[in-house]
Image (cartoon, rainbow, N blue to C red; front, side, top):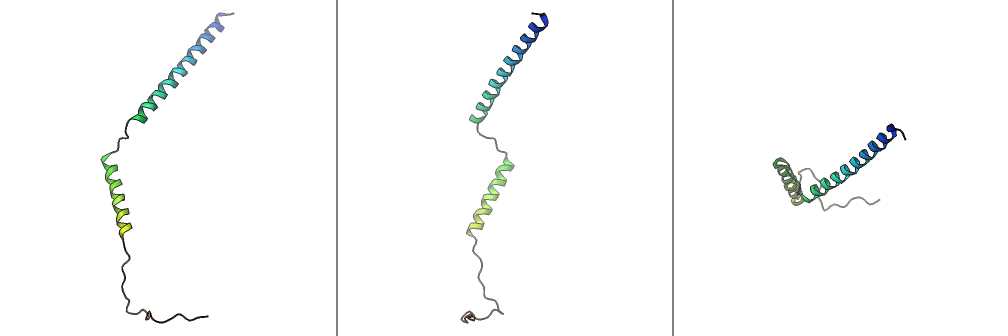
Length: 81
C-alpha cells in the first residue's frame, strides 16, 4: 500500500472521530440548555402582561345598551310572510 493511501485512511479516521466528538458535544449542550430556565427580558414580560391584561378586560367587557331615539318600538312584531 502506498503512503498516500495510509495517510488518506488516517485522515478519514480522524475526520470521523472529530464528527463523533462534535455530535456528542452538541448533544450535551442541548441537554444542558433544556435544563436551564428560559431567560425572558423585562420588555418581553411587560408586553406579555399587557396582552394578558387586555385579554382580561375584553373578557369582562359588556356591550353597552341604550335606546335610540329613532328606533322603532320594540313591541311591534315583524311582518309574517
